[in-house]
Amino acid sequence: MIAALRRAMANQQYSNSRLGPDFLVVVFLPSHYQFFLKFKNIQTNTRGKLDAFFPGMTEFIIARTIWFDGLFVDALKQRVPQIVLLGAGYDSRAYRFAALNQGTRIFELDITPTLERKISCLKSVVFIPIDFNRDPLKDTLEKAGWRNDQKTLFIWEGVSYYLDPASVDATLTFFSHSTSHESLIAFDYAITLNQGNIADYYGAKEFLKSMQEQHANEELTFSIEAGKLESFLITKSLKLVEHLDNGAIEKKFLTGDESITTGRIPGFFRFISASPK
Image 1 (cartoon, rainbow, N blue to C red):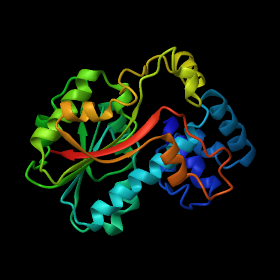
Image 2 (tube, rainbow, N blue to C red):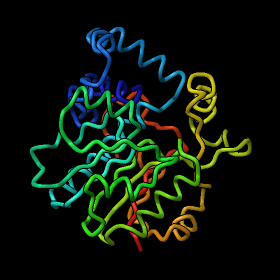
Image 3 (tube, rainbow, N blue to C red):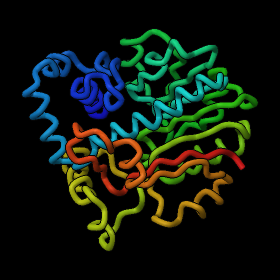
């Protein structure tokens, strides 16, 4: 919900420009959030409080939205048969880009309470309840009609770092062994933080402290050690397509626009896309 709120504020702040493209996410917010968003001073105060707790997170979500939007749109234009949103949350891409869809089937997977609330707001797309820490992804998708012989874009946004390593391994193993070789999985991840390197990454100390104090039930449980991505992909039978570190994300998505206040994201987040070997 907070991620949705950040996207909604970005949309209003940047007037539905490149930096705030999610003009539909507001429909998923509670009515009192929607009411408060009408007042610029409340938006400014809310943004200030969020930035104090999690420096750079709004910029990260703006950049993340742009990156995944691009992948989603490219898949629709290329008429990729299937797109799977792993941990869809309040993703609105199926609706924002509906005019570009020429037959791509879109699957949204998430925990039941989130999907039930989303379904109450929207009445289309294939919604699939799943607990990524327990439910076999292959069985869940196939029961919903997904076909493993068709090219598929998997979007795994804002999820991996909240799962246990075994669940991440299971998801990536499924992708590398049970999908078309033309398929692509795109996700964001965190590099491993410890007392020896935490001071090296912008916003890391504040982020972890705020997570412990404000979101104790959302512990970051999965990460990849810095410099170990290549060996990690080898063990998962994956081939790297694109990898963006914090500097590359900032340069590609957050430069050239003076309305971005800092242009920085938490230094330990990364974007990656990969395909089966």
